[in-house]
Length: 269
Image 1 (cartoon, rainbow, N blue to C red):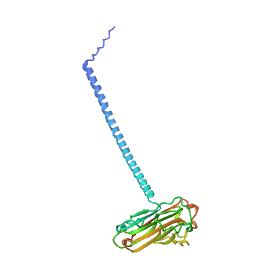
Image 2 (cartoon, rainbow, N blue to C red):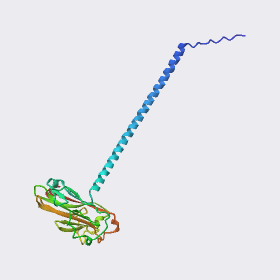
Image 3 (cartoon, helix red, strand yellow):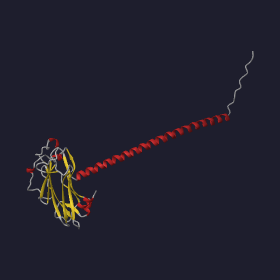
Image 4 (cartoon, rainbow, N blue to C red):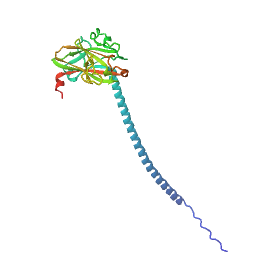
């Protein structure tokens, strides 16, 4: 019987332990390095994505601010200026043409606005206080009608020829089909109405509008420095008009009386 040769027991020296530790450290560092590179790439992508969302958010916020600003401007304009605006074109302003609500003032302005008429319903010409119209200054609206008197002035130093045009700047529910507009110029009145519905014939009680967008025109030649023309505009919904029906209730019409220099208008293309 043979005795088995005893196995030699290997000794684990301190140098072996050091080599093993260094190897584990190298592997750990290698793994850590890979993790750091992966983490850096991921962080870069997340940062880029975050920046894109920030830019998009900034653009969206800017667009929202601009939209709100536009709405605010529109609100200010519509609240400041009513259903009738009187304005002077730039070139006419340069010639000294102005407007004023009062006759006895030193100088005029370049834009005026009549007071609004709320909750309008139809009336007829005979219901208007004709003895009071064109006798006051500025706004003096009555129940269901607009009345406004102003003065066109030459505050400049030279004689000019001017034109005026009463324009329709906005309308809803076909209110213009049954409205009447009476314009006094230096005490002389003229009533205007849109032509009959689906016809070129004027209404029996009014001179036809110049077009769908222009109610009437006027002109004055040799308008001297210091001169004034007095205008009164009266507007109402005529109950005797066949187009005065329930469907127009709640509608509106907005007008602008614009004055300009006749020569400039004729020479413009």
